[in-house]
Image (cartoon, rainbow, N blue to C red; front, side, top):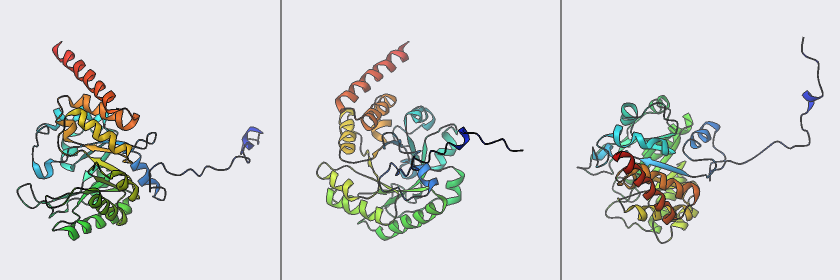
Length: 298
């Protein structure tokens, strides 16, 4: 027999409207639940931002400096990253399955650094992405390059595949040697990627007009770290990007090629998630670096 009704059981709070809160990420409110959940594995719901650690360079460069030993150089950094951007080979062979952050899998590839890099194909199927519990799939897009149409076709195919499985698509804008890296070009490339269905976009920071890039793109933008810079300069870059509308950073060389990568990624987190000034975050970096040196000496 069911229990008798009680006054407490009938507290339906009829005077309180049901919550209809929107999703915390720009342009993502109408996505499916599964994709929103996966995006929340990449972007921190409290800050709305992400610190992604990119080390997928080996898919065309081989053992890049700082990535010779993923198990020694990268795995210790993983707990400090909101998400890892990597290849499926490295994920399976090196990353502990106990890692609980987001997984952004490199989904395009083909030529090595010895050939024309823009001639890429999709290099993973959706079943494999689901099997590896990917939060997002990343594809390179070469707007203005020789293989522009082909790379855009890769993007649209990946968007279709990802939407069927509830997996986000990250479009990575590439800048070739013949292209001018300015706000006008970046606005064009990021907007095209968003218009064609990318869930979020990775692009380079430009000092003049980056706020127009983020304003003109209807989905989140994460800043690419680019070439290795001195630590304070890299922190300033991250600070300027998020201040001008970026939803986070996807840094590689500026973390794993730092003199103290573990200290550097924590300093980047201060800038991205806590809005710390670059100089304050740099002091955090120096203190953590000195602490690691003392520990190593003991």
